[in-house]
Length: 129
Image 1 (cartoon, rainbow, N blue to C red):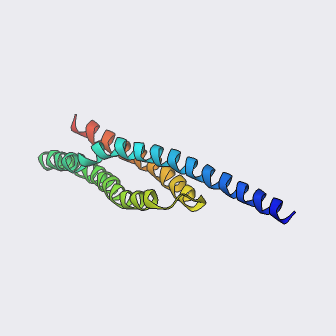
Image 2: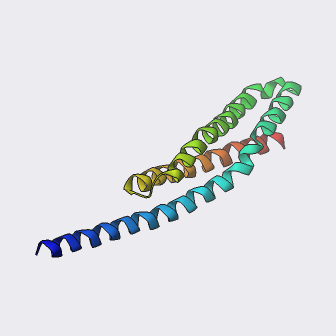
Image 3: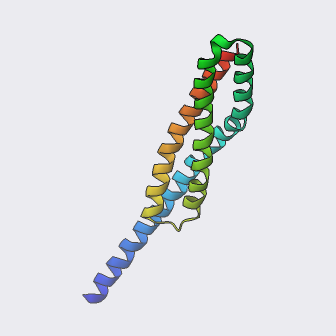
């Protein structure tokens, strides 16, 4: 009976660890996909900010709008710089429920970051038209 219980516990443990590994791999792929979508946009935010501020210099009535857009661009860039190391740390974690939780949180943050980055870029692009 003791051997049967031990066998059941081992099988259950292996099944749970395989599930965590599969879920971790899926979440890692999805979260890194978000990174790959955001990164090219993020790399251009500083140039967009410079162009926005340059336009505001030529027309001082646009200064407040330019500053608001500049703050949104800065926040998107800074948030990306903060998010990326956390993503790297989570990716390096051993497969476990803790890793699944970390990647789930980072995926949610990444989706929010993507939207904030796209919103800031859109405001800047519209301003520069």
